[in-house]
Image 1 (cartoon, rainbow, N blue to C red):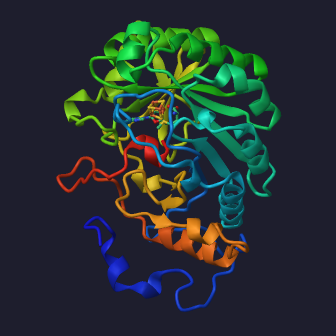
Image 2 (image 1 turned 30 degrees about the vertical axis):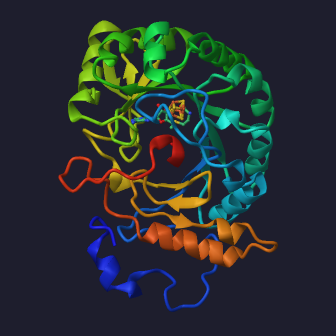
Length: 358
Ligand code: SAM
Ligand code: SF4
């Protein structure tokens, strides 16, 4: 058992909801996904592939070996899982990867998920390379919320970070998403020292002009590169920089203190900026997320060292809904208190970000 599991898990199985009570019901009222710290989980991130058309240095190794496609969950298997999760109170789904748009016909999956009773929000996180081609069909499928990852507006630094060319395609993708009607459109940038000092201000100005919300994510130890704390560009420094160089910023009045992103609005009302300070201000105490990897593993934390294989329960002629629900609940119950990036106990998971689903 991992050293970071909550201690009472090992010693008090009676605390687990449903233990000893037979097969758990999957009715929404009785089966909320609560962990042993009382955190409710309603937010599911579904990775649809570990493949990607970029090779971001902070996310994956250059010489990555991808899984065989036969190992990936089918759209029907993913939909079945989400239907069960929805019966347990999950109402928010985000499609991610790897790069989700390299998965053929992703819009068909989006349409299937949007139609699930109880699911009120399906979003997508993409690197934007294939977005111009797919924006219209994704919008028609019912997707509305979009996060497009873009760290720099400079072609040279884009190549340095992603090991590929493609800035113009990402910008075309953003433009296509805007004309298709997506909203909100958020631009995700990883805050890395050595890049953010140069790129944050032009990115912020671009997003203000285009009506996109910029979101910085502190660089986390989940990629292939050896991570060093000194390379994290802290949220506080970033906000100082933008407040000085772009326009003064104030914490948004409707800011939700439990949300991972701290939301700031420009004092001149021309847009807002979010910062996800996973390293300098972890939000584990209010985490409501679970993850399904492309190969069918449930993870209760991005940094989890254990995961639960749900594919055998989904890949049968008659998937056992009660067993899937019980597996999801058990996995959530076993969630640890937090990721411990800031402690000596931190252990980096075996999988890198692209294989988990960011
Ligand atoms: N390929 C898509 C994309 O890039 O948007 C979706 C998957 S990607 C893994 C999801 C998000 O994770 C992206 O916004 C990416 O910038 C972020 N990410 C990847 N590695 C990271 C790291 N080491 N620290 C912080 N964010 C990271
Ligand atoms: Fe691909 Fe996204 Fe990872 Fe970059 S961050 S390598 S685009 S999965």
